[in-house]
Length: 173
Image (tube, rainbow, N blue to C red; front, side, top):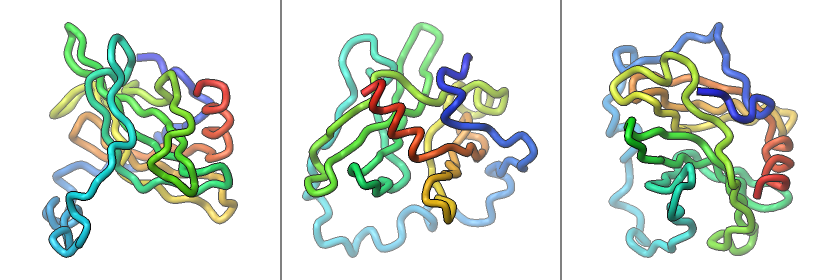
């Protein structure tokens, strides 16, 4: 798999990969605490759908980390799934939503930005999978470390730039 936009993210080869065997907590305790306390549960709005046809995100899309607040709106990193004869492939894409009306999608990338390339992303419980799990933004307000699931077997990290992602979206949105 060729990394389509290598200028956006750099994989960290020297960082250890956290696998399911190393994770000390039950998965549900991390993702579900307090879910029954949300008073507006079920009052959701459709913000973005999987595209039709032969798009890279034609079969399914999903969001994971919180949107990133920027001066231009809410930047969202999402995963898209395409089904082929060889199976599914999960890749990352970008979308920008209005700051005041976050249900309004201003731009959506026409290409994926990050795809399974490394062996640990291509081979595992579910091969050819990368999906965003979370991120941290450095004190400079631009450098982003994205933590992503790889082949449903490990968690890895890639580094990028919020500014570069917005510029990319201007060219590909």
